[in-house]
Image 1 (cartoon, rainbow, N blue to C red):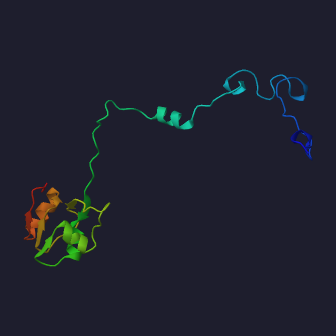
Image 2 (cartoon, rainbow, N blue to C red):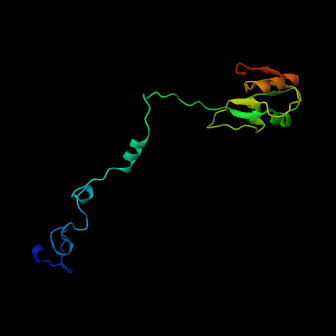
Image 3 (tube, helix red, strand yellow):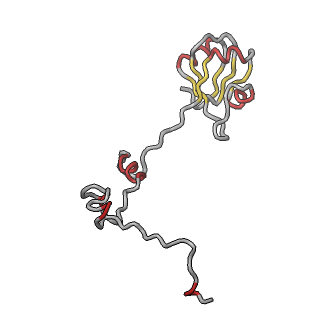
Length: 148
C-alpha cells in the first residue's frame, strides 16, 4: 500500500466561503462598511481606551500624597492608661490601641475629644491644640518636636 492509495473514512468537507453568492451572499452578515465589515480587522484593545480616558497631569513628578497619622482621642488614653504613664507609639502598639501598617509603626496624632484627668507623659506624637491644653491642665508633660 502506498500513501496515495490511502482513503479517509469520512469525506472531505469544504470550508464555507462567505460573501461569494449563495445563501450567505452580499454582505455576508457583516453589515455595510466600517471596520467590522472588513477582512483582517483588528479591534482596538479596551485597555488602551481606558488609559486614554484617564486625565493626565503635567510632568512625571507629581506631588505625592502624604500618609495621614493614626488619630487617637484623649478619652481612649483616659481609659487605657494610669497616672504617670508614658504615651508614645511603641506603648500604644503594645496596648493594642494602634496597629502596624505594612510592617511600619504609624505616626500618631492625639486629638482633644473627651476629658483627661490623669497625668501622662506624652512623647513622639503629633498633638492638636485642644489636646495639648488638656494634657498640660491635667498635670502631664509633652516631649516632642512634632507637637502641633
